[in-house]
Length: 287
Image (cartoon, rainbow, N blue to C red; front, side):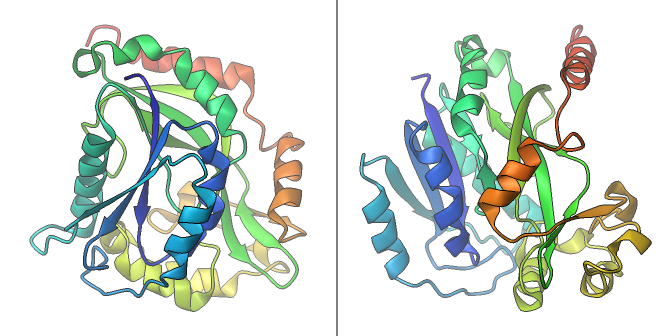
């Protein structure tokens, strides 16, 4: 026990796993991929899978770490977000309580997963009796918003995101109500940056389907590298949560990684991190 187990959900954008699995492969002890046995999304739509993807998995799995977990994840009586939460719970049970349960989405790319693992290891004592010492571990997203002609628009501030827990009492996707420990780790999140056709399909089939605000897609179509400074409010649920966008003059993910590492705006300050963690410690002190 006390292993680093990483779980992925397999769906219509499964090809992105070719970018999200390699960064976590070396530092993980085992990787689990949850696949609906009928290739059905949470909205009940069928998606096609190229068999070559599984050949790619075999090629990269040089240490025999990857396990496919097939099950029926489409339950018509549940909402999309309820199915999202349920699938993550079942996946974590498969991964095994007593290990670090890390869940990474197919469009999330860790900059330095080895460092994230070192941060997890500082808290291994929470794995001794996880049900009585529930905890969740957060990193920070840099969210890619839209590919443009010459670069990528991105949300101009890092956003906190939960990636690991010791006990999978999820109540909303991979989030629980337990205390959060924030770590200084960056994950590139290719959240909405895809073609319009791909984005429309995602919006119809993901866990947040019923939460997307009516004006989101029109604004996403409208914004570009020339007018982004004149527009405000870009979040797909509550627009003002993502107030402003900024611009990477490149589509190369390595160049973007270097830019983020050297950016003062996208850097998590030690003071900010300490305050966030103190706030969480104090909030749960008497619980």
